[in-house]
Length: 324
Image 1 (cartoon, rainbow, N blue to C red):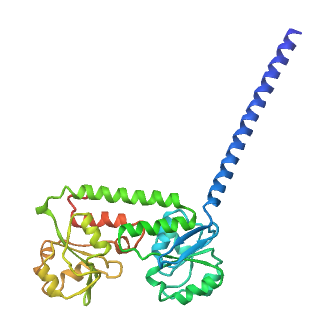
Image 2 (image 1 turned 60 degrees about the vertical axis):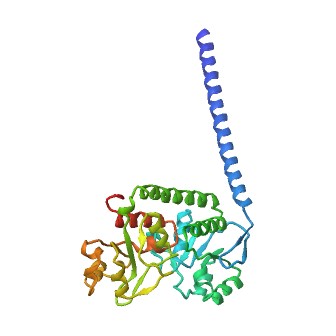
């Protein structure tokens, strides 16, 4: 009898323990479901949202976009940087990063295919201020079809790139990710700046950055991303003109840069040879000392998250002993 009572007591303890575990699991599941609901509600609470776009127009986005079409590579890279790869349903013919864009529907180039975009049924189209004026008729057709169009600002500085990222983040319901991405970019830039400050004045390099090869040589001048990058890495830009001027050989030879950086290697088979074989350029210090380097064009000109990689690549090209 005692053995039976002991067995029954043990059985009751086991049942009680299992019931307790079941209750704990149920409570845990309930808490997780509650958190998911709260997260979803918080996401919904961000909408509708109004944004002043790159043309100064106020755009209202009613709900979190589920399908997005990007009309320009920089917008696409920002969107991917915010984890919106599943929402992106269409990209331009010029998109090449990340590799996954190759599998997305193509909507055309500078002249995008309005019918194709409408067929993808996007909630949001990310346009760009650099081409908004020339494509206004097409953008209006998209608006008339009930599609929200956001024209992202045409950034010319790092601060304006941060604004672009913030704008896309707000429009897509990913503002927190945008803030985190911006903070990470700023941190990387500061790290490069700090290291560049170690360069002594007498070791500071003069640099010529060529963005288009001969016979018509175009370069990066003042108030461009590349000029800002040169300031960040503590180098001097030999081009004093604004923007992207066309320069003749005589002026470039006279400026005598210590380093020449090209950004056209992706379509010029031998960019360094293209530079060093030009008549009279053998007098330039950069050519005499074999300091002609090609860097990745998209990383130093495309207004997206990879600009920080561009700064690092440019720093290694100009100061290989400092930035290893």
